[in-house]
Image (cartoon, rainbow, N blue to C red):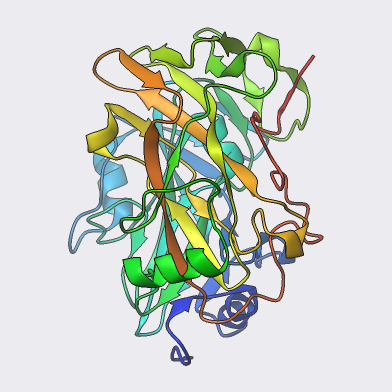
Length: 364
């Protein structure tokens, strides 16, 4: 089995292909080329979903399959497509499994369109004590826990709701290294807060008009994930408008907003958006936290791209104001530059984005 070599950092696309060839990443049917992204691998749903009573982690020394026997209410066959109901929790075995060498760990996250649908998707593993964290040298299956929060969704085997990023050693930039990089090549427009990441804020004074974002409607139809540009946005979303630079978030409501800053990810780096900072308010920002090398970068066809914010308010109504810092981007080194960049001929949906809904919806 390959041992990680070379500089520490996030593994690029060419290293992921090598892991696949050597069996550290296995799948049946085999991994498709389109699953390999600049700094991550898309994971595919299998043929069965288990409706469970509650979310769970396997726990040390225990297998997910054994816990499923404890918590499963019924099994759903996905072969010909099936609806995952809003508010229910499902565990779906993924087609991919891992046999990681020593020195290699991984982290998973929801894909962008998954987060924008308020489709809470987390990865769990045998022996796991955390969601979305795969320990060094893990060997075993992968599962997706899926909980539709705003819309019921129609899913099929092979669909890709989450993605996984592999790390060799420590990849996160220190504050000093991040300041130096930001000085050489501005990463976030404006004057961001730098503390274990670059701060970003919310844009509630758009340059044109008074449209600030969208709020998910509480009672809608089913979203078929394969139908791209199919659903009129007005059937699923309410427009959020204001001219005073502030909105009040309702507890339990889900919003699509946009960052005030434009974000750039240089080719030798990747980034992850911290999903929740307790000190800035009782809400969670961004379920889908990976930014690939090249996002918003001129060399990949970008000129700085806004970060779309997926916001859910928690316990109490909260006043969100223009320019308020709502989270941070944590930058990581790549172990080497990837041989493809976000937006460069790989059908990237959100390069150059502003305020934008998931790809299943159309405006007008």
